[in-house]
Length: 83
Image 1 (cartoon, rainbow, N blue to C red):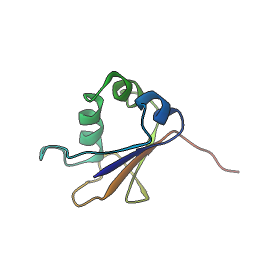
Image 2: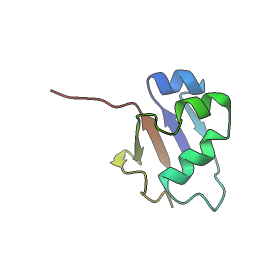
Image 3: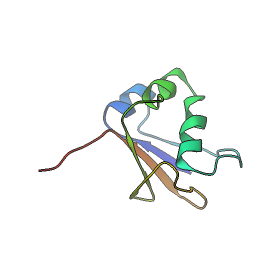
């Protein structure tokens, strides 16, 4: 699965994207976030509990309880506003 990071999250992680194979116990976006936090201090900082960021699975914005089974891509991005 491809993981993509945007804006300041990309700078904290040190990567714009990476290929990962999460363990079978990782079934939701929230599980994925918790697992990714363990990959490096940059991941832990970018995906810190309480940090404001959103997620998209296969280019659709989703809540953190969304399943990731079969996903090709999960992206994380900071909050944005429109006007």
